[in-house]
Length: 129
Image 1 (spheres, one colour):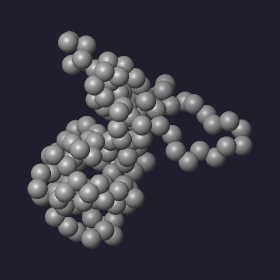
Image 2: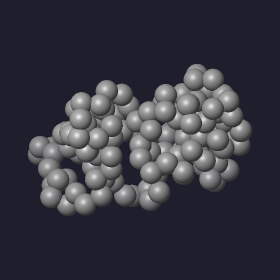
Image 3: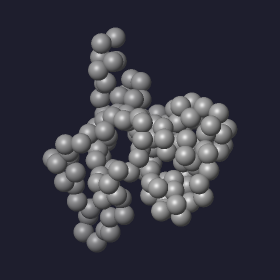
Image 4: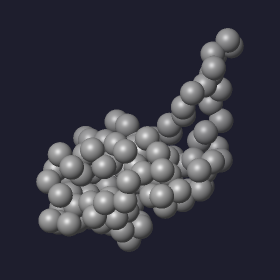
């Protein structure tokens, strides 16, 4: 993956991609750093690697989702989906069946460069508390 994206292959990037492949939900920079452990390098290295992987199109940053930005692996480059964010704890989950959510159109004359759909609510764990 890294070579195809023309990125240098490093231990930190391999560790970060392995974590992103293993996890089934978007991760914050802190979560990614904790899950990578010492193999991922220090927090600054993890941040730089997240940015490099995002620029290369291997992962996607979800801006403003909850209390922090999160990152998810891009499994299909053209595939976009919504995210559900818990307003109590900031947990983020992917919403795969969003056909009715993403029908918003830009005003006349606008060129759309990005589209994000976020559903806000209370996650099951917080609901049980």
